Amino acid sequence: MSQVWAQAGLRARLAVSIGVIIVVAFAVLFVAVRRELADESAAIERGERHAPALSIERGGTGGDARSELAEIRDAQTEVVRTLVLVGTGALCAALLAGYVLADRTSAPLRHMASTAAAVDAGELSPRIGAVKGAPIELQTLADAFDHMLDRLDEAFSRQRQFASDASHELRTPLTAIRGQIEVLARAESPRREDVRRVEQTTVAELDRLDGLVDDLLTLAGLDETASLQLEQVDLRRFLREVRDGAAERTAVVLAEEAPDGSLNADPARLMQVIRNLEANAWRHAGPQGHVSISAAARGPRLVIRVDDDGPGIDPRDRERVFARFHRSEAGRDRASGGSGLGLAIARSIVELHGGRIWVEDSPAGGARVAFELAGFEPQLGIA
Image (tube, rainbow, N blue to C red; front, side, top):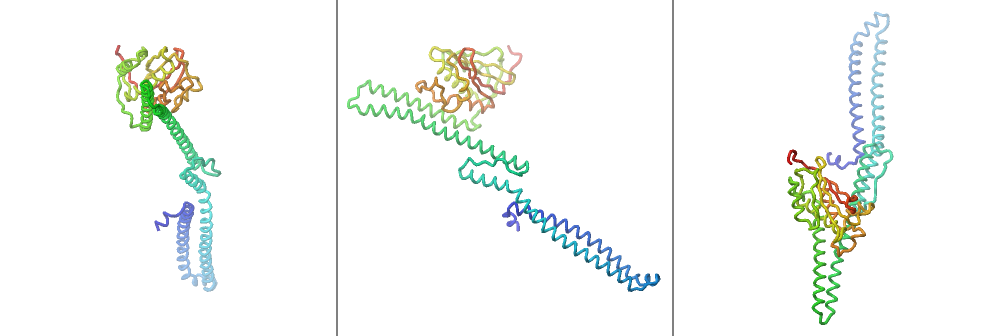
């Protein structure tokens, strides 16, 4: 029985459940009516024993009293018969109405199931949408399901685009290396300077390829929050490390409003963010430009800013620059060493820390890329 119930559909379960409820209610009513009639029958039997004497005293006959009692019994029997017939009809009507109600109630769920089956087959475009006549709970479920499909569709689109961009970026240095080697191979007696030129070009392309592979592996690792190794980072010591590792012309400034304190973060990943932003700033600022790194506390949050005096970033591109493999018009040249992944890596690390990153105008005249992290604990009272 339990196996049959487990295999039954929602419509059958609702119909049977409604029928069982009605049967139980009718059985209780029937038992109550039968008990009441039984009490009346007992009273009638007692009356039958006294009926002849009572009828004679009143001047009647005992047959009249027995006739009246028989009519009462017939009426009781008719009541029981009517109750059974009405209850049976009500049960059949309830089962039919329960099935219709269950069918209408389960229709949105069947539509969801068919949509899920289509998605499982690999098609992400179907959506449930507004379900006519669905209760608010089912419509909420449908909206949540559609939202999930939207996110899945977007994620798969990004994945496909990422795979396409990655294959293109990897193919470019390989094509350059192949071309240089083929040119060298066609020469019967290559000159020493030609071999040296091919060597330099090949090594440069291999370095670029190696950096691209490292960036791709970094992005793959950042898909897991477990990649963060959080600890309390001393701010001033960390900024000294930033200054020691920065390019000679990069100015590292600790703003006066940033007191001593600690930040709950992954120091290696945080340093990677700053290095990526610094490298991006130098690509835009150029050899004669200036880049500065500064930090400021805003209550329990810390803001780190990287400024340059380059051409800046168009406001329309300030969100797109964080997309993977995106290059602004000023940074399209691969000779600059940019893979288009530095800012994407920076955003992934910042968001894993629960922070945010953005681009704005710099007081130096170029672009400012800033990010904000929570978890800063200032040490008050220390000069």
